[in-house]
Image (cartoon, rainbow, N blue to C red; front, side, top):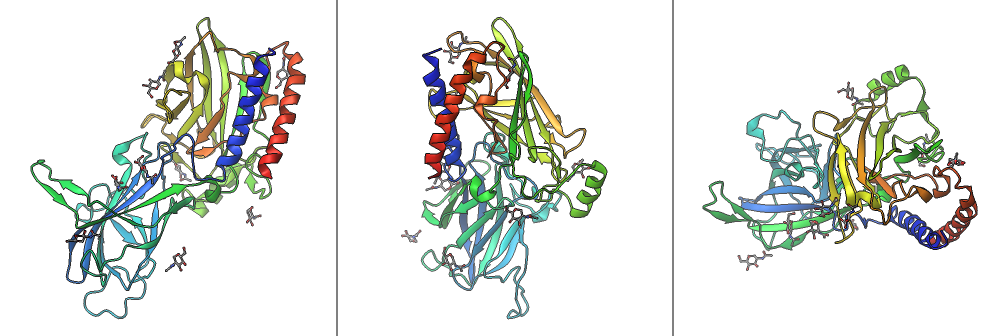
Length: 437
Ligand SMILES: *[C@@H]1O[C@H](CO)[C@@H](O)[C@H](O)[C@H]1NC(C)=O
Ligand SMILES: *[C@@H]1O[C@H](CO)[C@@H](O)[C@H](O)[C@H]1NC(C)=O
Ligand SMILES: *[C@@H]1O[C@H](CO)[C@@H](O)[C@H](O)[C@H]1NC(C)=O
Ligand SMILES: *[C@@H]1O[C@H](CO)[C@@H](O)[C@H](O)[C@H]1NC(C)=O
Ligand SMILES: *[C@@H]1O[C@H](CO)[C@@H](O)[C@H](O)[C@H]1NC(C)=O
Ligand SMILES: *[C@@H]1O[C@H](CO)[C@@H](O)[C@H](O)[C@H]1NC(C)=O
Ligand SMILES: *[C@@H]1O[C@H](CO)[C@@H](O)[C@H](O)[C@H]1NC(C)=O
Ligand SMILES: *[C@@H]1O[C@H](CO)[C@@H](O)[C@H](O)[C@H]1NC(C)=O
Ligand SMILES: *[C@@H]1O[C@H](CO)[C@@H](O)[C@H](O)[C@H]1NC(C)=O
C-alpha cells in the first residue's frame, strides 16, 4: 500500500489538472487532431463569378452535430451575391433591390447558410446534403460525417487571381463552440468519375479548419457522473450543482414540462431541466455490478433530465485502464480510441441504430443502458482505491463532472485509507490553487 499511494495520487493529480485545462483550451488530448474542415471547391467560372461545391467534413472522432443542425456564416470580401444554391439555403435574402429581372438568392454581406431538410425534392439535392444539418462523428459513421451544398456566386471575380475567399467564417453547431481559421489555398481537389475512368480537377480549392472548445460552447458543464458498487451500499451521487445552480430554473412536474416544451418548440437549445441536486441535463451512472473469478462486470446507465432535448446519435467516451481487456459489451457499439500508440484505455460507446441510439427527453423512457464485461489483468486489477471507476467520461464530446475521488465507494475495512485520501485531497487542492493562479 505504501508503494501504491504515490502512484494513485499522481494519477489523481494528473486527472485533476487535465480537466482544469481542457475546459479552457481547444486542444483535446483524446482526439488531438479532431477538427471540422470546410472545403470550397470552385468547379467552374461563370459570367460574373463561379460555381463552388462546399463540403463540411467532421473529422472529430466523437463530437457530432445534432438537430437542429449546423449554421455556416461568413463575410464576403467584395460585393459578392449568391445567385443560387443547391442542397442548402441562406436564412435571409437581404436587400436585393438593386437587381432587376434575375434576383439573387441572397445579397447579404454576411450570409448565414443552413442545410435543407430530409425529404427535399431530388432535383434540389446534391450528394451529402439535406440531412437537416446533422453530421455524424467520424468514428460513429464516416459516411454521414460530411455535409455538402453547391453555391453559385456572382460579382466575385472570375479567375483564380481575382476571386477572394470568404472571411470570418463562423460555424454554429447550432450553438457556439467552434472557431474557424482563415481560408487557405490548397492543392485543387481531384474528382473521379463514377466509372473511375476520368479524373477532373477543381479550378481552385480553399480549406478552412474549425476547432471546438467546450469553454466557448458553454461555461457550465452539461453532464455528471455518479458511482456505485456491489461491495458498498452507498451510491455516490453527482456533485451538488455540477452543472450550476445559479440559474435555478427546473420543473418537478412532467405535465407542466410537456406543456412548456410544446410551447417552446422541439429540441430547444435552452434546456428545460427536471429538478435534481446536480442540475445536469445528463447523468452517467457507473455501477460495478459483479465480480467473477477472471472477469468483472459494469453497468452503465445514461439518464436524460432535459425535457427539451432528444439526443439522437448520442455517444460516450470513457477512459478506464481495463479497456485494453474489454471482453464483451452488451447493447452499445464500441470502438477503441487510441490517440497515442500503445495506450488503449479509452473507448467510445454509442447506441445501436433503431434500438437505443435515440436518448429520449426526460421521463420514463429517458435513459439507455449497457453492461460491460472486462477480463481481469492480475497485474493491475483491484477493487481498492476506486480503481474500478472510470477516470474520465465525455457525453457527446463534453467532459462530465466526476465525484471527488475521496468519496468513491470503499471496500469494507478500507477505513485505514482515510488518512491517505485526505492527504490526496490536500495535494489536489494545493495544485488546483496553482492551476487557477
Ligand atoms: C483535421 O483533421 C484531419 C483528419 O484527422 C487531419 O488530417 C488534419 O491535419 C486536421 N487539420 C488540422 C489543421 O488540424
Ligand atoms: C492560378 O492559375 C495559374 C494558371 O492558370 C496558376 O499558375 C496559379 O498557380 C493559380 N493560382 C492559384 C492560387 O491557384
Ligand atoms: C472580420 O474579423 C476581423 C477580426 O477578426 C474584423 O476586424 C473585421 O471587421 C471582420 N470583418 C467583417 C466584414 O466582419
Ligand atoms: C483540405 O480538406 C480536404 C477535405 O477536408 C482534405 O482531404 C485535404 O487534405 C485538405 N488539404 C489540406 C492541404 O489541408
Ligand atoms: C443564467 O446564467 C447566465 C450565465 O451564468 C447569465 O448570463 C443569465 O443571465 C442567467 N439567467 C438567469 C435567468 O438567471
Ligand atoms: C422527442 O421525441 C419524441 C418521440 O419521437 C417526441 O414525441 C417529442 O416531441 C420529442 N421531443 C423534443 C423536445 O423534440
Ligand atoms: C486496442 O487497440 C487496437 C487498435 O487501436 C484494437 O485493434 C484492439 O482491439 C484494442 N484492444 C482492445 C482489447 O480493445
Ligand atoms: C490485457 O491486454 C493487454 C494488452 O492488450 C495484454 O498484454 C494482456 O495480456 C491482457 N490481459 C489479459 C488478462 O487478457
Ligand atoms: C462505503 O463507501 C463510503 C464512501 O463513499 C464510506 O463512507 C463507507 O464507509 C463505505 N461502507 C463500507 C461498509 O465500507
